[in-house]
Image (tube, rainbow, N blue to C red; front, side):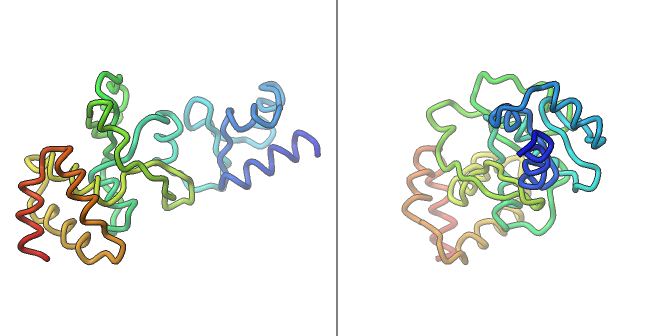
Length: 197
């Protein structure tokens, strides 16, 4: 298989996106990649990420590629989990405390910070609407995040998220309560659950 064939395969496999790290992993030089990008008129959408002209733009995937340690959270997690029908106007993500995020804030991304020992709780991988793998938090963790940020969230949005969660077939109330305790929102979540269950 030639380098061009390998690159075309990667491009198809990744729904029209090409990551420099994927190219290096299959042993193709940067020079060959650069030639391929020029010949095929790929657009550079982020450092180390190129997109073909016939692909749908995927802001979630671009952010995830540029900030691989970030995890989509809050209203963006609700959207990715199927709790919300519309894509949020601005994306929300969570990063470890002490991580630089000024560039993201300048791009209009809402950045939440959390201490390292709680950061990894509930991380899952899911597909963006364009079919790319991104990291988000599971439903239980997302509910806890919403309660932690309840001063910045409309009450009806919080209620709608909890009601949707309660209707889920695969909800995990013990896990929700374990997270609620770890994130110091157990009292508030229990009050909601007592009313809704």
